[in-house]
Image (cartoon, rainbow, N blue to C red; front, side):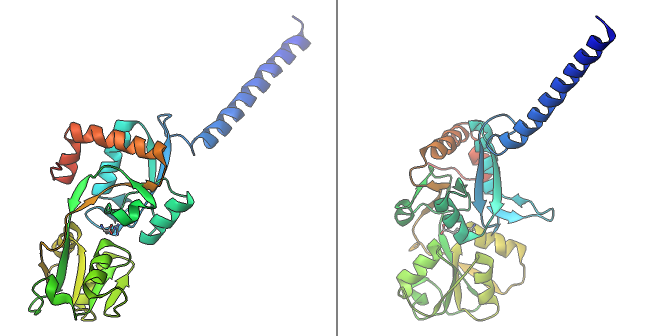
Length: 263
Ligand code: ARG
């Protein structure tokens, strides 16, 4: 081989090496949108992260809580990757409908009304509503709420319960973007009571001492079950979630995370 040939074959190797590096880089960047680090599918979920212990932001700006832990376990069991975005409560629903999000993980109660537009996984947590009032309030039960000012998180089961009790367009109902803001209204006296999800209310009471608030439990509130939510007919994602959920129910992981035994 003469000098020229040697040189040109070296060049060829160099060009081929550069090209494959370039292609690998491109492939990686593009593929990352659709696949997780393990090569499996990568999903995008949405939540509203002022709902501790299910989802809240830690001081590093990460979303943490039971929903994140359950989703991590499901993803590991079912072999997919996911990213969770804190988009806000109503946007969770809108963005699943528009296809921007694959699923919702936000302590979402499975209801017949929602089932007309969305599909839910099997339940992963049992909950119920409770009432929050000021200590010394004359309100003792659900029946005492009728002519009172009630604060709720908008378009939640608590909102629906208030409408059923007071009438759908009763102006005594005020609806807020999140549950802590609804409870804040009772603290500052602009509402007589708030209705919210039990675990979240109790977590709020634990984290906010000396609020002068107390919790009333009433078994007139029906049992609720949380599920992960997808767009109606999105069988691909629903199956992935249910498959992992089934595994972590069977191996006891779910119970370990939630501290609750589901039948
Ligand atoms: N479980 C209630 C519902 O589905 C409230 C859920 C609110 N979740 C949240 N992340 N803010 O209506």
